[in-house]
Length: 322
Image (cartoon, rainbow, N blue to C red; front, side, top):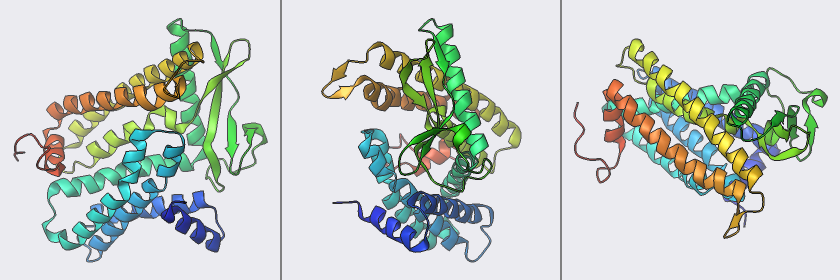
């Protein structure tokens, strides 16, 4: 039995004469714009409804990706994306009922989502920017592997995963390089990694390998702190973004080395790439983000207060002051 919301979106996309991927991006874009209205124009009478529509749209967009993470057996992202829609609906209803009494923590969370979604949406939707990030990610990982003496590698040519199947070199792709006007496959633009003799490594680099998702979480959380002066916000960004980039490069190098060095390893049906990518690296990334947040709390105590106020009372350690 297929997922009902996915079927509904697919049917609507067919009615409009566009692809499922294009409609999903449209849902995400409209949701981000609606939340931006709710965050930046709170004085508008219609702002609560814009905000509610934004929460539900972003929740639906994330939820529609849960089937993909089920297919690649990524349990962490399955839970996160599957829970996004009910959470978005709950937040939308709460916004309408409590707009005039919304705590500053919820207003911050609204802006946090806006300024996390918009940068990623732009990076994904502008092919030249998308490819630049993918290329930089692959190059950094190759340099790290070479520097650590973990092998001799080289990057293959930029490839395009076509919607509906098939992969072609970028030189054969006729799409618009500045605005993504056609859907791509799950891998989008990607760079395969090769050994120095030209044989392929079973790992390629896509936009999701860049650590951009982790970076924009902190970008959104920091930029949305309206009561904090920009000097402190910029200092926090200069701490968070480079640190995440370096840690992500180590993560990618580790995944490549483990997958390439132990191609036949398996545990309970889980192969080395899936174990390293979906389990070990995810756990390490979440732990690193937790430590990063702790480090930023000292510079931005307002961030700590907002997070504590949004946590369920049973999870928050003590009372948040301020």
